[in-house]
Image 1 (cartoon, rainbow, N blue to C red):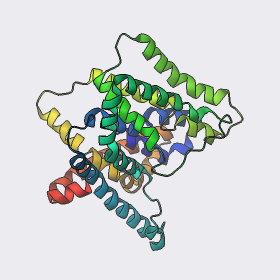
Image 2 (image 1 turned 180 degrees about the vertical axis):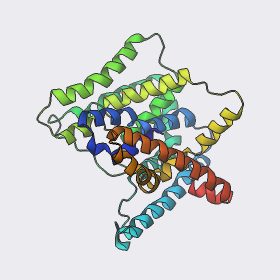
Image 3 (image 1 turned 60 degrees about the vertical axis):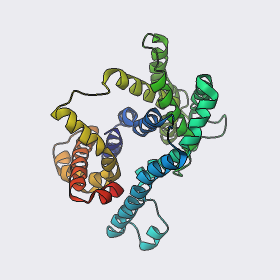
Amino acid sequence: MMVVLLHGPLVYMAGAAPSVSLAAFLTVADGTNLFFMLSGALLLPVTTGWREFVTRRVSRVLWPLLLWSVIYLAVGIAQGRLTLWDALRLQPEAPHLWYLYMAIVIYATMPLVSRAIAAVGDRGVDAYLLLWLLSSLIPFWHGSLGEFAPSQHPLSLVHNCYGYVVLGYRLRRRPLPARAWWLWLAALAGIVAVPLFEFTMQPALSWRDHVLAVTHNVSVNAVMTATLIFTLTRRLVPERLPDGPAARALAAAARATFGVYLMHLLVIDHIAAPLLHGWVYARGIHPLAAGLAVSILAFVVALALTLLLRRLLPPRVARLLL
């Protein structure tokens, strides 16, 4: 849902005040980071053989990536945004699929990382995470190391986002102590202070440069926010819900979230936003509220479509597509 919320408001974001837009963006920008943390928490250490692990995990991501890339390119051609030549050159048409490129590399190398973690032990893991946290300050070092300009290549963040994988493993194996109030205070202060410093102490930079720094996947405030969300969720949400209709419905929805992720941009652009467009502008609804409405509708429609396709398609086809 956080990923859908990240993309849904973009339809109407231009009409909102920049500060309000950024605040809303920051609340959901950690969606993919939490995916990486969950991968580390659930899959590390790797206990199966290298070939078995890689074959199972990479194939689960590779085929949907290929199929949905073709689907998004076909839609772009049908709408006249792309030519056949653009499609043959794999012109980017589904930017949200960058996560799958990353996931393929992470899954392919996770057995090796698992061995490295076993070799260095807990202190080695903590040392790595400390260095990684220090590197999360880089997006804010404007002018010191040259103007920060993140690469747009889908694989450019693998080395940075791997920190979230290791962080998820560490927090599941050794959670932050509940009584270490200074850790929680430091995290909250960082989430507030870093963007505040960025926007008030460096006025010469453009708004776009500020936003790129604050919302970068591996900026220090993104790391701290993801850590807080992951830790609080583990403490407040039970790992197993009592058996019943609600638990079964939630489990079914959880199994369908990959399909929601794959198709949600199509649903936003061609179903949710067109359906709500006239209603939003006729009533003068605030752009962020409109974006929230689009996101909720897109999530519900994508979830329903995923569950329907899983029921109608042969199991092997459904697994390849969703």
